[in-house]
Amino acid sequence: MPLHNHKVIIDDLFTTEAMAKPLNVHRISRKERNAEAVYQMIHDELLLDGNSRQNMATFCSTWLEREVHELMEECIDKNMIDKDEYPQTAEIESRCVSMLSTLWNAKECTNHAATDCPPAIGCSTTGSSEAAMLGGMALKWNWKARRIAAGKPYDKPNLVCGPVQVCWHKFARYWEIELRELPMEKGKYMSSPKDVIAHCDENTIGVVQTLGTTFTGHYEPVADVHAALDKLQQETGLDIPMHVDAASGGFVAPFMHPEIKWDFRLPRVKSINASGHKYGLAPLGCGWVIWATEKDLPEDLIFRVNYLGGQMPTFALNFSRPGGEVVAQYYNFLRLGYEGYIKVQEAAFAAARYFAAGLEQFNLFEFINNSSKGLPLICWKLKDDATPPFSLYQLSDGLRERGWLIPTYTLPPNCEEIVVQRIVVRHGTSVDMLSLLLKDFKEVIAELTENPPLNPDKKRTSFNHS
Ligand SMILES: *Cc1c(COP(=O)(O)O)cnc(C)c1O
Image (cartoon, rainbow, N blue to C red; front, top):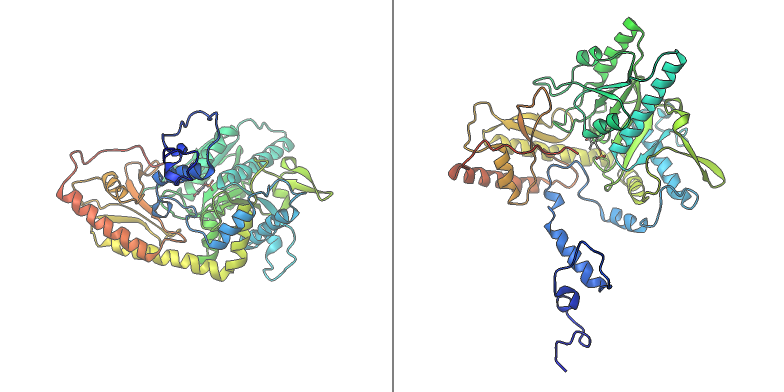
């Protein structure tokens, strides 16, 4: 019998039949395959993806504690919607909602020492995008109810905001709302309160402000816009509510900038969304939306599901959804507390400052944010008088060859002629890693200077902020 008869010999994994030819990947095969071999092939194929720890573009968690991995594994079979079958997971979600309402200073929860905080209203979502949809829908329903009560038409809703993440464009299109997205002011990289007010009218369902914009990481001036809306009400009677997109800032500002008023301390702020899977430190697939009070979430939007013989209100776009992300979020709240979150975010700011100081040495870049104006991210452009023989796009390409993803993109109107680069510093971005990144910056800049690219102004399709 020949030695290579696969049927009798216990093969090495890479000599099994399944490994002998490329997989047919566009049709489900007739036959089954060996689990170990298929696992190995998929595992190996995934090596072709970028390395998430070198992805300096993302705000999302790319490093998680061992305990989080374990809880995720333990929760693989838990369905968030099945509150009757998994009441404890449902209970954990509602504890997280209470914790977040306290963190964001909801009125009913201002007694931080209270252990029996009244039930706040809110829910987990798959991320800030779904949370923003829910917050936006509540604004639309409430506005419509006010219009009906006043006997006025409700067919031309609009939403006023500064430069927003793409989820708000989706919200506006899916729910047929006119999006009045205001341009970035030069040098400020945000919308101005004056501009916001100028675009509000009786059809404005609400004003959205972003705590930590995706473009530059700046906090928008929520309190100033709030004051301007107060003035507008005094002058015109228009009472316009606010929603804060705190996707990133919701887990940074309370720990690092508690003096900044952006949350439910401001009475016009009716709802807040945040991404648990960004600075909330939960694994991917976790977002939150919280309303200031129960009356800010229209009853009409709530579906009641049977929960242990009682009625559990749900408000979500999904039905089945894994429970692990919420459980892991709860783990982080219990494990870190204020002390731990402050330490984690302080470490991110310290690492960001370290990187900014290193970048300054090249004498090529001007900071748009050096982490002093919002999130711990560094955003820069070429200095006006710098004339390197390469573009920022080409610098990104050179760094990509070394595995780093450093996005280069143009800012939104009216700053679209400004080309910037950005790194997002987060849990797991160590100073040591950033020192390696700076070393690669130095080497790539030297290479590009020595062998300049033929077409230094090559433009690219812009980085996608989704
Ligand atoms: C990331 C982000 C979103 C979208 O959040 P997901 O959690 O990715 O769905 C929305 N708004 C802002 C400001 C963001 O940074």
